[in-house]
Amino acid sequence: MTETGRARRRPRPLSDLTDAYDLLEEVRLRPGMWVRRSSLQHLDSLLTGYGVSLEIHGVEEEFDFLHTGPFAQWLWKRLDMAYPSALGWAVEIERAAEAADVPALELFFDLLDEFRAAHHDVQPQAEHAPHASPEAEQPHPTK
Image (cartoon, rainbow, N blue to C red; front, side, top):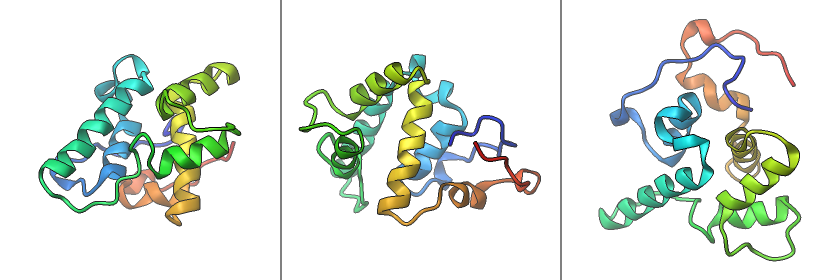
């Protein structure tokens, strides 16, 4: 679920981020700052750069967003695709979003929450709480 309709927390300094998921939470908070024209292909480029930087600097971090990485492998099954897409996860989520008539970034973050709940034992609602301001810790209506 996206931040829409929730009390919003303040952005964090980049120095406070610890991994790609923290970066994605900043993207979720202010997508227009990070992703041009709400394009998942631009988000994919951002994450590719992040992954390349990890390699260049020898940083040990679990990184799920390579084109054939854990997120993509999970997504092909989740979207009932018969075989992996050569076009990548961003293109396939954009196609699914267009077919469902929902914003692509919204679908991406919904799918990301599902993936994390299944593979990282992270609950979508609980994930946002550690960085929320006290006034943001009010109950949120469900969909």
